Each structure stands twice: as structure tokens, then as C-alpha cells.
Length: 305
Image 1 (cartoon, rainbow, N blue to C red):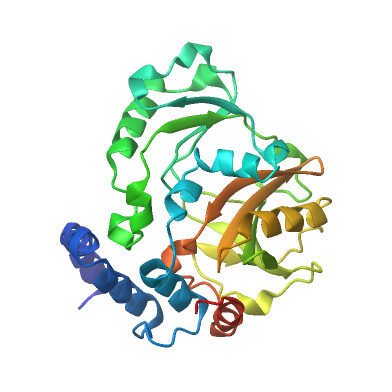
Image 2: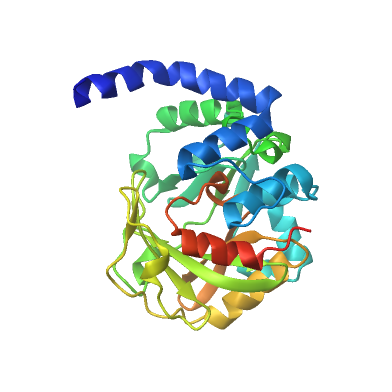
């Protein structure tokens, strides 16, 4: 069978697969999680004795205390948690919050801003010139995003407990990054119950790809921990050590305290760290772009029982 024919069949079957995943996510989320894990790693989840970080993320999701996950995975509600922890200074200034697209006063928005839903991933409006913005198109986009049952098809049920809304924040200046990049450098800090461990850096982000590399707390690079793939391309450059690295680690330690594992995502602009989000199920617990060695290292740092 030709490659083009196989691709065509996969395209035709995609709607059926998506409906099946939604059905499993609604009625049998654990089965869906195991199915997706098997597709990514070639084996089933060892529910009795989870070892690598992906197994442990799934174990916590179904057997651990996830009561705070909906609030802290909510990109709007988490702001109050950050303030409660005495870290309000790292929050990106909020411009507005709306429950409906019809409530947005587009004329009152500044010339530059970032707009997104509070319970999604990607699909972010980065407006650098409001005069060039297709308001009608983005209004339709956000109406659709508010209706999406995010997390259902990936067995991340905590996202379904988030009341969706739209938020707009100040656009951070990406021109002052320490390396040439089409986007802000994302410093994603893997943290375990108040102990930061590794930083996964992402930059040159597009809807289809980004450049990545793993660093330890001393800012030594570890390319051996990454699997180079089409979407997550292993960077051939070393990102300069962030000016605010120590402050970033303190932030990650404070925000992750009390949680077996959470990835705290931060940015840095002009030497100052800014909060991005907290992610309890990074990549839906399918970090296929890490080597087995690194998955095991992270798994050993995560205490589930």
C-alpha cells in the first residue's frame, strides 16, 4: 500500500478516532489514558508500580489528590494562588476577563495584547498591531474555543472542571531575549514537592514546531535527554543562563510545594521573571520527546506513595 494511500485512509478515519477518544474520555478515561500511553511508548501503564514520570503523572491523575488541579491549571484562577504565595509581582498585568465573546470591548483594548482561553493549550492571539487585527475571525475562534471540552479526549479530566473564560494580558517584549527567537523563551521548570530539578527550554515556537533543550539547575545543558523530532527540535545552541535563574527556582519551589510533580512555566524579560502557567500533566503525560533515561530520572524524583 502506498504512503499517500495510507495517509489518505488515516485522514478519513481521523473523525472516527476522535469521536472514539471523546467517548472513552467521558466514560472510560483510565482506558483512554492507557491507550494513548501505549501509542506513545509501546507498552501499557504499570498502574501497580509506576516508575517513569509519564506513568506517575497518570497514577496521580487517577489515584492521587488532584483537588487543586482545576484551580491551578486555570490560567485565570491561578493568578490568585500566585498572589497568595506572595508572588504577585511576577504576574503578567491583566487587561481583562470575559465569560462571553460578546462582552469584549475590542476598541478599549490596547494596541498590543495577548488573548487566550483559560482552560486550553495553544490557540493564543498575540496581537502586535490592533489595526491589523481581524476581529470577526478571532471572535468566531474564541466562540469555538469556549465550547471545546478541553481535556476530555486526552484523559485530563481536571480541565473539564474549569469554567471557561477569555483573558487578555499585556504583551511581553520578546525583542530583549538573550538569543534570537520568534517567541519568548519558555523556561519550564520540572518541580517535585517544592524542589525544582530540571529546566526544559522552548523557543522559536510556532504552531507546528519549537526548539528545545534540557538544562540542570547549574545551567549545564543535557542534549542527551531529548529525542529530536519534527515538532520538538533539539536546539544546536546554548541559551545563556537567565539573569533571574535563582529567582525562577525560588518561584518554582514556592509554587510547587505540596505537589508530587508540577511543571512551573516562566518567562524572563529584562532580567525579571514572569509567570506563565502551572501544568500538572505536561504533554498529557506523554513526554515522548524525552529519552527513557530522562523519563526514569524524573520518575525517581516524583514520590507518589
